[in-house]
Length: 200
Image (cartoon, rainbow, N blue to C red; front, side, top):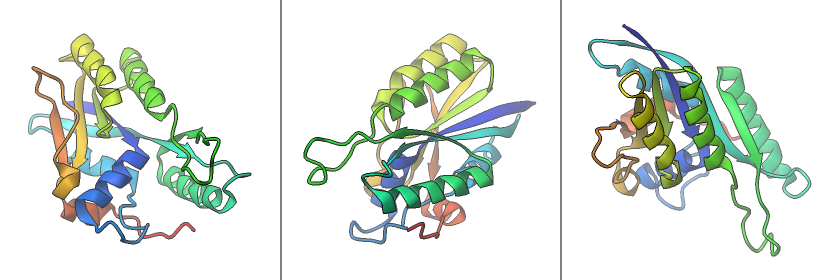
């Protein structure tokens, strides 16, 4: 039986998790970059034996630098987003929040987790997927995961993704008292989804 699968990617969370899992702290900024469509294809290919998962959409959530404050970083970010979109992903971006003492303090992502959580719930309500997969370890997303599971199971199934290795692979999103399948991606999987492009 065909199942429509939508992958929701927390870009910065997944990138940092990959670096913690597989790379030294002082490694190249390129280490940890990934192709979100290829991750979606791997996840969809690992369906249950009695079903066929069809990758319907990959949604990538990311913070966006301000062009007036970080021109080079903004340009690199836009090139990366364009590559994701050219491959078929839908990019949802929100401008970074800059603290008063920037650049001494780094800008922060604000609202990305909320946007991702709202879409995860809204697309379930609108019957846009049969399998919703969260690629993130951000616990702020747990209420959305719990709501979709409790409100729509078994018609809609929730799953999660994380890297399987070192410090990056020892935690995952879960629901107390429920079995939520985690797609653990090993280093061999990362080699299949690696993006070696230097967008700078």
